[in-house]
Length: 290
Ligand SMILES: NC(=O)c1ccc[n+]([C@@H]2O[C@H](COP(=O)([O-])OP(=O)(O)OC[C@H]3O[C@@H](n4cnc5c(N)ncnc54)[C@H](OP(=O)(O)O)[C@@H]3O)[C@@H](O)[C@H]2O)c1
Image (cartoon, rainbow, N blue to C red; front, side, top):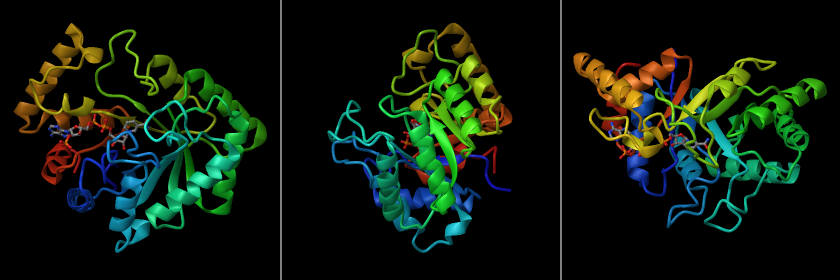
């Protein structure tokens, strides 16, 4: 059975050099991992990045692999047009979608993408235009399945209605910020969106069932090792107590806190995306799932 996690690669090719990326990818494969998560804009915000570095490293690694052993997940629509900021993005017009996919296919060195995500809602383009273009890519065989990331509950609802009305490709995957503890009330992650009860209910009641992927499950390392301080957006007495209990559980099972967190997300029906530049850490983090 495939490992029930995806490998996050946001820092591949920028803050993580090619050699370490290959070590992590090799380890992921050896542990039974098949799903690799990237985006065309990873990581333009890095001082040496322009976007596309992560896809390029994955393409180089895939070159001598059996392509059909892996599910390549990439995202489009949030590449910066002004090189370093999120306020002028490529967006999701039909032309931008088609152009972006050609770029991703080229960098990944593949003829198809397993899952294509709309990375971020594009308020300047109608949902229908975006989804018709993305559905066309499935019909052409360049893409297998479609996903959305960081869409508000209301926009997900409208999109699902449009899909049914126009007979378009279903949303098969959704990707949001999510972990085993909730953010404190009012925490703002814009342009990211964290799952709340209303959004979860919407995602679980779509016209077609979908897989919910949870990004940032380890809160950038704060939920990886017992005793670490929680970031302000997650710091509450209830969360500290929950994390301490998970730390105890980790100790008693001779595993890391990260391993318990990832296992718990899987048990709750999510597909976590886990990231590290260190192959041994990846093995430890996946200890309870392999
Ligand atoms: N759709 C979206 O908008 C969106 C947004 C954000 C992320 N994502 C995807 O989700 C992936 C995961 O997100 P994320 O990077 O925020 O995940 P995360 O799990 O919250 O954090 C990953 C960080 O945790 C650290 N870490 C991992 N294991 C550790 C350990 N055992 N001890 C100490 N530190 C540890 C890693 O540092 P080291 O490298 O030093 O180990 C890494 O920098 C990304 O790579 C990307 O593919 C998608």
